[in-house]
Image (cartoon, rainbow, N blue to C red; front, side, top):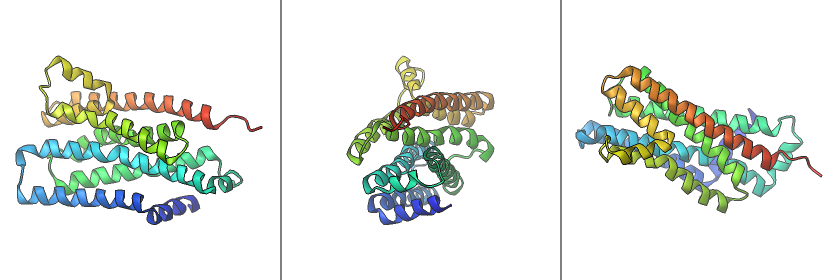
Length: 234
């Protein structure tokens, strides 16, 4: 609980991090207003999915930056002598990350009401998309040593997730559309589209496939993180 309180205090002190949170709230408010005024009704599905794709990696980046900032400020040295193991501290950040992105995603779906699906059908695709934040957190921590590296790497990771949005703007039966399946985020998009079409079995299978895909990428990032950070100290 002390570490969680410390993270919340760090977000409030960091202008960049607080701006990210503020932007997420502003986007949610803007989407709700657009829906309530009836604007762009033909684009509501696209708007909803693009918004969902947009914030997932960003929250993972925010979580990773908390840890990197601790290294820059020397706070990580204090954590090393605390009763809380480093792996447990990372697990706590990841748990907070998932809870935040899931609650924000569910709030977005319920408040904006852009896609009329039962919440039970939203849960699997949202859970799959939330794993993008976990993957971003671990990958940034595994491969970055400072904030500059983290920012550059995040841009590449963010693109890997955001590229799934292209699937909404191209012919879905085209051969090149299948190339986008290289990102598990596209699997979540296909899941939501299948649920909208009434294909509940296909929607569930696409979401479960996305979860398995993300789990594989997360496992690779965990191995990379352990190799880089869990070496015996001299």
